[in-house]
Length: 607
Image 1 (cartoon, one colour):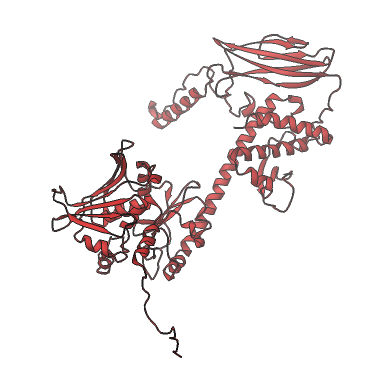
Image 2: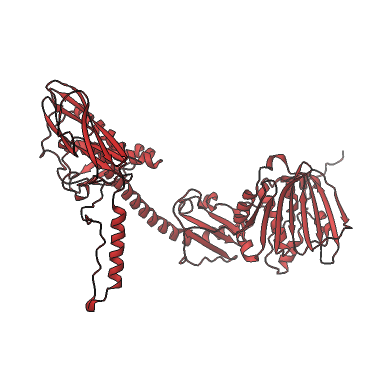
């Protein structure tokens, strides 16, 4: 019997089907914008000073044309027959810098843009040639061009464009190239213009500029393999803020956070944006928008450890600052909403804080602005004079600014009317005072020039007097609903407000002014305590006089996803704690009634 040959020995791998391999390489590039960037980079590598990218339509077919004034191509045949063996790789090995490509597959990316590529170029020898490639066709053709080619350089034409990418307009190409080729454009000084003839627009590609503050004092990044360049900025947190990963000025990844070893703070925080350019990373040849996780990548990750630690500290401090700022803003809005509510609600039932009496800023109009010190006449005060009778310039400027501020603080014309309280519960034959507060568009109180008239719009009772800012209402002898209305007049402007009065023969128990925990202390502040395993949402710390909010509770986490929802949630917790702390004698049902009443009028003023 014949002995079977053993499959042993050594050898070299070979391509079994060259065209199949070329097809796989061509189809590996799936991003048409990346393909356009490849064409622009080829022009930059050819030392072009000007590049035009033209998108238009000719005889019913959409096309893309790239024109440059670079050195051109002398050996078209080499380009067509040396796929994956670029001449640029040899030039790099000879020490020529500033060249990006090295795989010899850039032109094949036209498959993702259109059906046919025509490349016309004039090389150093002054001869103009034209090469034609067709998608899904292994052949190529090269021919000299008889017509005079005006300038040295190259012109690439892809026609027709694939139907699925015709929506790529000039702005999209501009924005992509501004980020993708940011440093290559800056360092080479190349001018890239985009002419979108379909939309009739001409655009210029300028390197992307980052917002925020440039971080100067970062530690030096060293790697034994090559150079790492960082340009990082600290900005306000936004989801779109990211640090791009680049190589030789060309973007490899839009966000370094897409790499597992960098998928954490500070890279995912939204506070840091910028670029990290790593010269020694190995790119995936097909798409060139990914990297190979080899020893070079490990060296890069290890070199970034110190910078990552420092950025984490910076982001942590910034998060604390932002949280404090947000807390102050929320606190201001909560106080404003509660003050507005207390103006509307019956004063004698909600007099346990200094909202009405102890806070000078709210004595005038309840908006939190104090204007009692403004000059009644509105005249600008005379600046003080220095010794010798000469006017001090600094004092004069200060006085002028103060006078200007006072001028703009003056209330404008009548815009609205606020009734205080806007609802009330009274016993039969009981007396109660109501106030009509005239306001301008910015809710500033108007103290003069307004006439107010009162009337009983519905029900019965008496008003005394029927005119003026403050009126006393006497409830009727029988229970029922009465509605009183006030109308304010100023020149041609009018504004009206109502108060709904429930007259009953049985009232809720009066609040003991000494029973409340927060009597005459003003609104408490708030702070956070993370207790994710506990069910409480908020607690009142009487000793520190703050409301402690459990920011680990599921409700807080849900509310924090939306700013308005978070504000309303905190306001409801405030309402709960204020009611519990100041109506300890009420039953559960009565506490719930108070809670509904307070939240109803506070949430009216949330924006």
